[in-house]
Image (cartoon, rainbow, N blue to C red; front, side):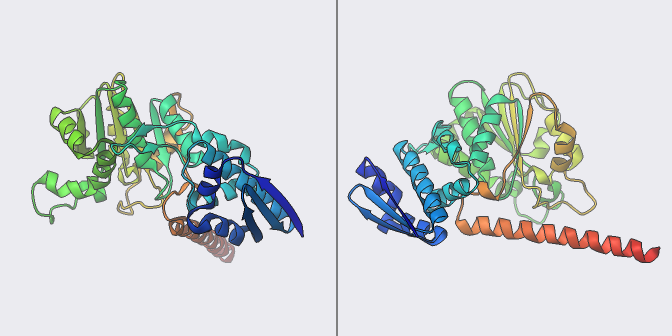
Length: 334
């Protein structure tokens, strides 16, 4: 058994790190098999030597984030613990540096994981960025935040958000209303992100002036988009032809962000995903960044991260089983 004492200089940091009813401390105890006791400005850590070291580094990382004004919750605690286990705690200060933009309610939007930080930096540095990763990694939300920031800074004159309708827009006839009414449900996540960043009143004002456009991908054909920040969401559901069409809409002074989850493709089995092909075709092209987010970057409910990891394991096992079956078939044929 080992024991260490950690001194915390400021009481507000202790309150933030401990969480409501010390829930963050209980989480660290549960995950790292240590015992934590607090008295005034001290935290006493006891347990196995290695676990005590991990707990101390986790607490130090959380305190450094709290000192920079970061909100500490269960997701933050789990993420910092993961970094400590990987020996990457020295990279933590990068997370609290840059505010991408401030929402209509005054909430600062920042990258919450190192993967998200690399994604945001790539958007800032490159003309075209592909953000690929599972649900809950903030691909669309951060892209919209970057677009709003660029618009407010007058770096672009328009924000254009687009999405392919499910199944490449070919089976929407059963839905009531005109075409816009049919595709609006598929564009709702984009509306929601814009409402949060700008507020409904400002959003509607910009929409009426044409400064913001939210439209299905089919509306992009034949256009050249200058001085615009263009986001293509759910890009895994584009065909190869649609993806090429979209990429060639790029005009002068514009920036493109393409987001998608390659594990959730709704295209017919005989159609190649435009996103998957674009990753292969554009890899290594100058001024184009390809960012891959993982389950570690999920910032939704902890169960979402576990679901993503469970599906990843299932897919790997299935691919392994398929390879083994093919090998057995070839062997039997011989």
